[in-house]
Structures are given as C-alpha cells and as structure tokens.
Amino acid sequence: MLQYAAIVLIMLGLYGILTKRNVIKIIVSLNILEIGLNLFIVSVGFVDGGLAPIFTSQNATNDLNFVDPLPQALVLTAIVIGVGTTALGLAIAKTIYAKYGTFNLDEMGEK
Amino acid sequence: MSAILLIVIPLLAAFLSILVKKYSANILLVVSFASVVLLNYIPLEVITIGGFAAPYGINLILDQYSLIALYAVNVLFFLVVAINCAKFKKLSSILLVALAGLNGMILTGDLFNLFVFMEVSGIAAYLMTTTNQKPLATFNYLVQGTVGSSLYLLGLILLYAMFGTLNMQDMAFQISSSGYHIAVTAFPFLLMFIGFGVEAKLLPFNSWVQGILGSSNRLTGPMIASVYAAAIGFVLGRLLTELFVFEGTLLLIVTAILGFSIVAGEAMAFGAKKVREILLFSSIAQAALVALVFLSGFTGLAALLLIANTAGKLILFLITNTATDQLGNDDISTLQGLFVNNKVVGVSFTVAVLNVLGLPMFFGFVLKMNILLEFFQTDHLLWPAVILIVSVVEGIYFIRLLLKLWFKESDLPQVEFEFTLKYVVVVVAALLILFGVYTAPVEQAADDLTAIQYIEGGNL
Image (tube, rainbow over all chains, first blue to last red; front, side):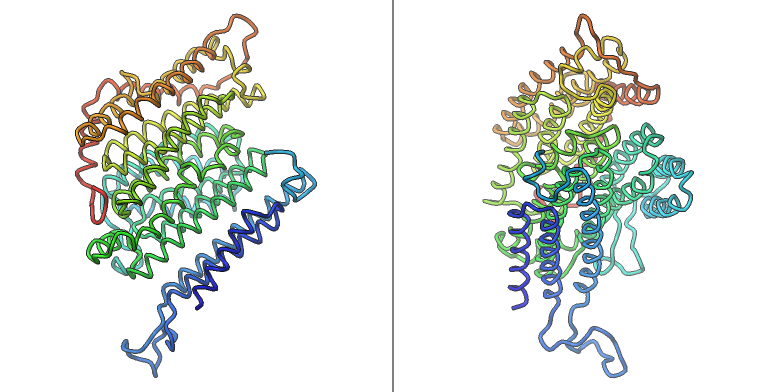
C-alpha cells in the first residue's frame, strides 16, 4: 500500500515539474518527487510485523523477523543529497530573482 | 598506494582549501597533478571498503578499463585546471570536489555508491556553471540533472527489491542466473538508462546542454564537454557492457534513442549559426555514437573513441571560448578570420576538427575505421551506413567552419592566446596526430580492453 502512495507522490512531483512555470514551485515539486522516492525506498525494506534490525539482549538471534536495514541507510544518504540540491536550487532561484525581478519563467523573456 | 587515495585526497584538499583560501588555487593545481602522477603507482586491484567483503560492502574496482578512464579524466581535468585556476580561484574547492566525484564514479563497483558520486560531481557541475552568468540555464540543468538521477535511483531500487544486491558484478550474476524473463528487468534498466541519458547528453533528455555549453566560459565549456563527458561516457560504457541486458523491444528502443541522437545532433549542428552551438550539437552526436559502439560490444574501440572525442573537444572549446570571452559573442561572422594571425592555435583547432571527423592521419580515423570493420564483420550494415552519412554531414559543416575561421581579407578579430593555452592545445593536437600515424599501440589497447572485460549478463 505504501508503495502506491510513494508512486502517487513521484507522479505528482513530475507533474509539477513539467507544468509549473514558477521557479519556487518547481523546486517544491522536485522535493515532492524526492520524498515520494525516499518513501518508495523505505517501503522496499518494510516487513509486515518486522522488528527494528538491532541485536539486543532480548533479540539476540538472526532468526527473527527483522526489517531490511539497507534501504533505510540508502534513504538517509538520498535525503542529504536532496537537501543539498534543494539548497543549491533555492540559491540559484535567488540569483534568478535578482537578475529578472520575477520567479515566473514566462515573464523572463529568455529561453 | 591504493586507488582510494584518488577520491580521498581531493576531498580532503577541498575542505583544507576552504580553510586556507589564499592558497586554494595552488592546492587545486598540486592535487590535480598529483592524481595524474599517483595513477602510475597504483596496482590494479579490487579494494574492499570498511572490511565488509563485496557484495555486502562497497568495493572499488581498478581494472584496465577504469585505469584508462582515470588517466583520461585526470589528465583532461589537470589541463583544464592548469589553464583556468588563476582566473577561477573561487571555484577551487568545488573543482576539487568535482575531481573526487568523477574519480569515485569511475572506480566504484556499487550501484548506489555510483548514484552518490554522480550527485557529488553533479552538484559541483551546477555550481561551476553559475560562472556562465546564466542562472536560468543553470537552474534548468539542476532540475533535469536531479530528475535524471532520481530516475536512476528508482530503477536501482527496483533492481535491489528484485535481486537483493547493489554490487554491479553480483547484480549481473544474479540477473543471469535468476532465469527471469527479459521483460522483468526491462523497466528498471530503462529508468537507469534515461537517468544516465540526461548526464550523457543523449537526445531527448538533454535540453540543458544548449543553455549550459552555448553560454559556457573557458572553464565550464571544456569541463562539461570534455572532462565530464569522458567520465560519464566511461561509466555508461561499464554499465552497458557489464550490467544492462538490452534485448528485443528494449534493445530497439535504446538503439532508436541513440540513432536519433546521432542523426538529430548532426542535423542541428549543420543548421547552427554559432561556433559553440556547432560544437555542442556535434558533441551530442558523438556521445550517442560512443554509447552505440559500447552497446554493440566493441568496448575497447568505444573507450578509445571516447578519449579521441573528448581530447578533441578540449581543444575546440578552449580555443572557441577564449576567443568568445575576448570578442563578446561567438557568431561565425564575428570569429571569421580568427586564425589568420593565430596560426599555431589555428592548426591545433584544425587537427582537432579533422580528428573528430575521422580523416586519415588522425587518431579518430584509426578508431572509426576499426569500428566500421567490426560492424561489417558482424554483418551489421545499417550502422556503418548511418556513421558514414553523418560523417559526410559533419564534414560539410566543419569544413565550412574551418574555411570561415581561416580566411578573411581585412578587419581581422584581435584575440590574444596565452602561452599555457597554446602549449596545451599543441601538445594534445600532436598526440592526436601521433596516434593517428603510429597505430599499433591503439589497436593493441583496443584488443586488450575488449579481452579483459568481465561479462556477466552483459551484451557481448
């Protein structure tokens, strides 16, 4: 079920990137796409009724129903990268505003 | 000495260069030269990171293929930096991060790690292109690059969900031994290919190229068209030969994309009115041609063709962008007669163009001829025909351009080329001629590279 929600978010993000003409809205759409993607990655490792993949005194055997920890590690990295791109995108948006005085792509009069 | 130093040293130097800003340009120059020197002392090996053996841990693969790729990328990077570091001091840290990212991308044997390095070098590239003073083009590049790498990541996660591994060789092995129908892996492979297509400038995913390279300066032009193109091309080549399984309809789709890129790229270059646009459209066509040769299984020739093209593009973009910086624009009419007073630079430019065209006596000829021979030997007649026809189109617009640049009676454009630039372009041009005449080592290297490829689930 989680996968469907993630795919809907990814599609929403793509739709936003393709249709919006405002620089900030495009960055927001990019973020929605990334969140959907991250959710999808986490959902891959999900196990119904699974335990957190940590060895403790109670859970000291490999036979238990652990969830897959690798996608969680991947998502952490992907989130950090996403934040980096968003920050850079916003910085560029600021330069665009300083140069053209607008965030709207149609009002800039340049390809 | 270990190959991991090629990633660690630039990354460490990037942080240090922030602390000692005054010497950041010197650090950049020393580190990029040191990476080239270091390549001579590292043995070919597979490096395990963090004590976890592959496929559980990340490994770096330094084989013959990645060694050649590293030589090409590091040497080109050093040349670009050596010419530009004084003028772009502020970018020193970013360039060091870019070097770490590019080296990592070539070395890594892990698909997710590849995504990380792709993003690292990508973000460095976005930052570099801000010096073009075209924030809208940079923004466009950022959005397309991010969507591309997101698609790559999506494809990668689908593969992980199916096969439970991220290691390239293990993945290839699992795919070939799973016995799944080809359609199962088609979608993730296509997503990953499109993701790479954005960075590798394949049509129709490359609308950022015109904004970025069309208004590039002396740093970004050669860096994106030459250094980045080489790194991405080599990585795409590794994926195409070792991992991706393209068959049936999927193979048709991918070859159609590549064929379209070649034909449309050359057609657009033919119609372009500005020098940089001619160069950037022709580099789109060449990137697709290299990918096509990789896809056809001629790994060694494709790798060398990639080097020949990127070395040529280095010369072309360096000269064009220097002239454009001084003259204000890059219309052919503005640059007409540029080489009348700059004969040395002009000869190097001509050599690079003829090399890209694949005329006899130049490096590009040896490669194109061998590629055509290989195609004929495997009974493929369509691609040789396409390659020959687009070569004629290429010939027409490049020769037209050369005639304009060489001949003008009066009112010549005044452009100063400094000694370093002249030195670099002359040496690279001389090498292109040397390997065009002395072909034995080239053919040997191509055979060696094709022979050592580790193939599991690949196309060959």
